[in-house]
Image 1 (cartoon, rainbow, N blue to C red):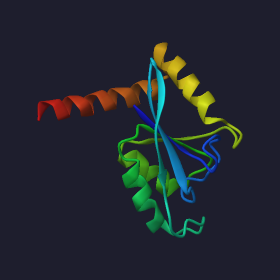
Image 2 (image 1 turned 90 degrees about the horizontal axis):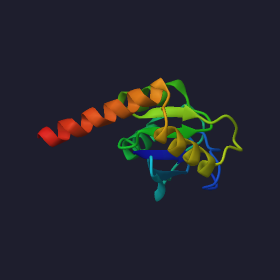
Image 3 (image 1 turned 180 degrees about the vertical axis):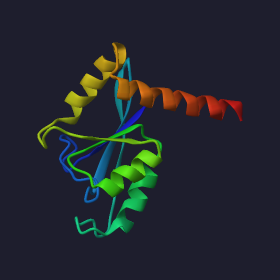
Image 4 (image 1 turned 45 degrees about the horizontal axis):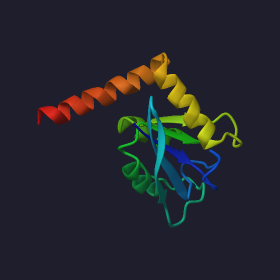
Amino acid sequence: MKIAFATQDLIHINAHFGSAKQMAVYDVSPEGYQFLETIGFDGKLDEDGNEDKLVPKIEALSDCTIVYVAAIGGSAAARLIRKKVTPVKSKTEDDEITEVLEDLVTTLKGNPPPWLRKVLQQQEKSFEDFEDE
C-alpha cells in the first residue's frame, strides 16, 4: 500500500497538509518499505482558508492508503476520506518517517488495529473490482 507523509525535510512528519510543499510517498508491505517519490506542490500554500490549493494535493494522493500529517483541517480530512485515503496526525512534529514506516511494517506482520484492517479490506475490495473489469 502507498503511504504519504507531509514533510518539510523528508525526515520528519512536520508539515500541515494544506501548506505542505512536498509529500514523501512510500510503498509499505509486511516485507518492508520502499521510497517511491517526492511529490512537490507549488503556488500559494499558506494556511489561509483557501481550499483551492487542496484539489491538486488530494488528486495527487488519491492512490495512497494513508497520509500522515502534522495537522490537517476538517474539510481537507473529509475530502481525503471521500477518496478512501485515511489522514493520520503525527504525535509530534519530531516524529520520523522511518520510525512510522518500521512500526507500520511490524503492525502489518502482526495484528493490525481495527481501523487499519478496515482500510486494508477496502483496498482489497477495490483491487478485486479492478480485476473483474
